[in-house]
Image 1 (tube, rainbow, N blue to C red):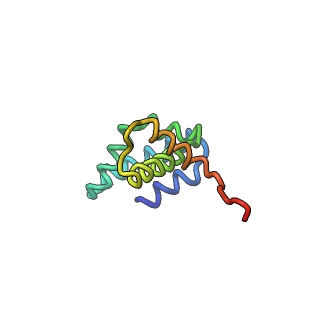
Image 2 (cartoon, rainbow, N blue to C red):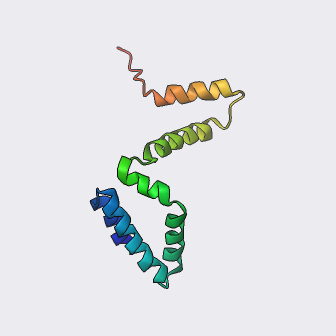
Image 3 (tube, rainbow, N blue to C red):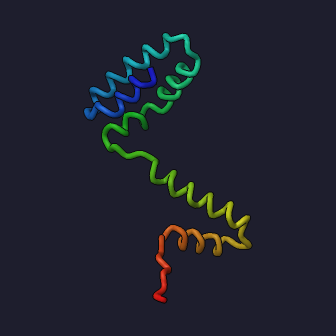
Length: 104
């Protein structure tokens, strides 16, 4: 079931076809006896607009999750900042990927 759902996301480009395929998959998932699958199907139904929007925009939150991961790493490494300005400055410094190789 998981692999079929992944195939829908990977292979179907047309939003109308994706809607039909996901509705068919949801019907199958709800009738299954697997509780994790039923829970996932319920989540898909609750976030239906966002799920379908992916097929028109092809945008995900992957980039933002990556940025957030880097910010959390900065926060862990510093063990806290005395003020927010220092924290923001460190985020900019880290995110800029500056090259500090000086000639010898």
